[in-house]
Length: 432
Image (cartoon, rainbow, N blue to C red; front, side, top):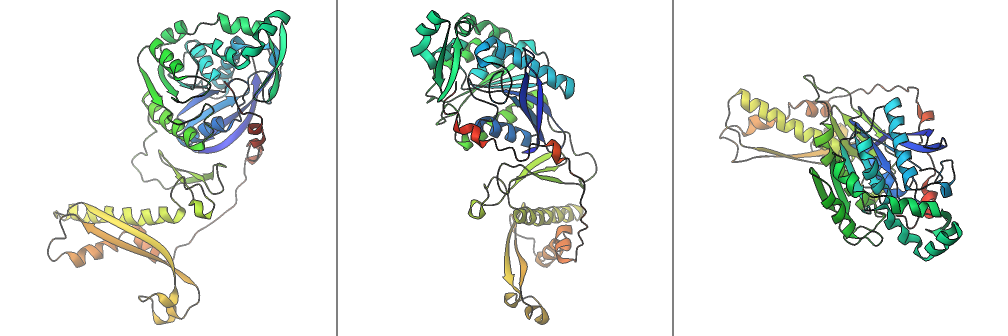
C-alpha cells in the first residue's frame, strides 16, 4: 500500500500546471508507472486511487494526474483533444524521468487506455502497457455526446452535459478523434501489452478489447474483469485489476531485491490511508498488509497484528524443529503448526502459579498444536515438545521483553495524508 501520496505539479503540453499525485511505496521503488484516467474523469476517481494504492503496496510507484482542463489542473478543457492528452502523457513521463525515473509501466483507463496505446512507442523506457476498459479507437468517445454532434459541426462549439457536468466540445475535438488511428500504433509499439476488460461493460463493448488484442503483437495478454462495471466502482474489482497487473508486470520490471545473507532486523510499517486500520508492511523484499477484521472496523485485507504474532510463533516452531531434525539426521515428516491466540483471565489459567491466578486482568494465551506427518518416531515425543519450547519466538514471548520507543521527526508536510478527494467521485458517474 502507499507509503505516502505526494502532491506534485508539472507543466502540461500547453504550459499549464497539471495537478498530480504520486503514490509511493514503503521501501525501495521497483518501478514507476504512469496512470491515465478516463474521459472527463480525474486522478481522484476511486478506481484510479485504489489501483495506485495497491500497486504501491507491491513496490510500484504510480503517478496519476488530471489532464489539462480537468480536475485540479489548469487550462481550458474546450481547447483540448485526444492529441493533447497524449502530449500531456509525454509531459508526465518527462517529469518522472527528470525527477525520479522514467516510467516502465503505462496504465490507461477507458479513453486513457487509448491514450497510453498512442503514446507507448514514444516513451522508450516503457516495458509494459495496460489498458482497462479501453476503446479500440479514440472516436468511440463520440457516442457520449452523439445527440450534439450535428450542432457541434454546425456551430463550432456546444456545451454538453457529461456525467452530470457541463463541458464545451468544439469541432476541432471531433476532427482530432476522427483523424486518430490507433491500429498502426498498437502494432508497432513493441511493448508487452495486457488488455483488461469486462464482458458486461455498459459503455465500451468487449469487442473493443478484441480489436486491441488482435492489432497487438506478442507478448500480449487478456484478462476478463468479469462482472465489473465500466468505472470499476466496486473496490474489489479495482483491487483485482491491480493485483493482476503487479504480478504480470514482474516479468518486465524484475523481482524485488533479495534480502541478502543476514536476517532482516528492521521492519517498516505505515498506514495506507486505505482504511481505518490498514497498514503496509515492508521487510526485506517482502511486502505485506496488516489489517483488522471487518467486525472491528477494518477491511480484513490482511492478517491482524496478533495473527502475525501467532504466525511468528508457528513458523519459528516449525523451523526450529526442522533444524533439530536435520542436525540429528532424524526422519521427521512434514511439520504443521497451528497457533490460536486469545485473552484469558488469570484465574482461568490452570498452568499459572497460584499467586498469578489471584491477579486481576487477563493474560495472552497461545494454544500451539504440532502435527508431524507420519507420526513422531518412537521415544521422541517429549524431545519434540522440548525443542519446540526452544524456538526463539517462544522464548521471546515467555521472557520479559523491553520495547524502547522514540519519536522522530515526520515529513508528513510533504504528504497528501488527508486530502478530502472523495467529493470528486460524487460528480463523476460516467466517464469514457
